[in-house]
Length: 200
Image 1 (cartoon, one colour):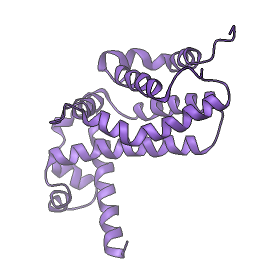
Image 2: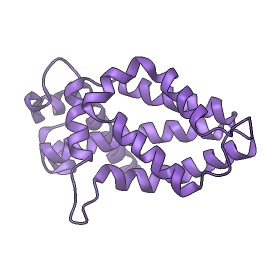
Image 3: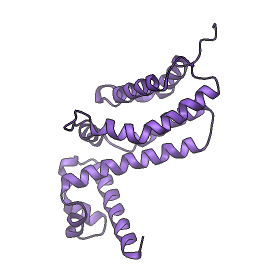
């Protein structure tokens, strides 16, 4: 990456971060203007339009940037090579910490965007989840089996569907706020649910 490309990426990042901060302030997402975003990121309004095209596209890029940061953070937790249980708890807490940075309007708008179906009937969220998370989850399952924490009767395919259903369910606006205080409890139940039966 040359100097010009690096400056461009830095400007884009500043715009995304400024938009994220404004979208999570007391003002509603729909009330945030491109002028405010430009002013907050110390760039011209024309620069914002040049990089992102429209306000709607910028908002979508903010959602993607937020999720990318969350995924990077999750990968860093995986790379620490903690035990299966410690990793799962850390990853659950990591997700909660990220969601604590956003307000309800941002969350609901992001979920509406991410669960929007495409021509194949798949939501953007599930495509992204499939591409970026499945590899990480498979590594986690293999770690759990090696430590004797996951019953061998559960296949990778089943576990991926199980976790997928769990993530989609928790991401539901009706469930998310209620389950937040119980992160430790539902993670514990998840760990116990897939653990080998000690009586066998």
